[in-house]
Image 1 (cartoon, helix red, strand yellow):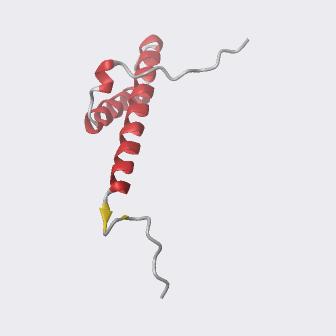
Image 2: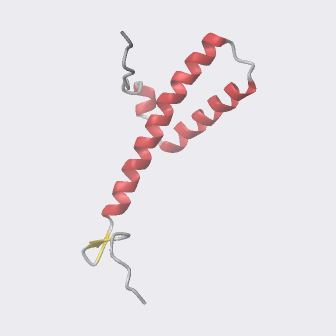
Length: 86
């Protein structure tokens, strides 16, 4: 029977990272994997960590998007008002 992949929570060190630091580490991992000089076991470990960093960055971006959408002007959320037709 095939095992359904699960999304384990990010390790504590990743959970504490800011977006920029996580992106910097993710970029470093991508460059090392693209270089092709990493042994298989290390590549799998790096890929796993990269996947965790990617999910963390996506969550940070989604959170930031929600915060921006909540910013209001005159009681209405910005970016959600219909535009006047000319």
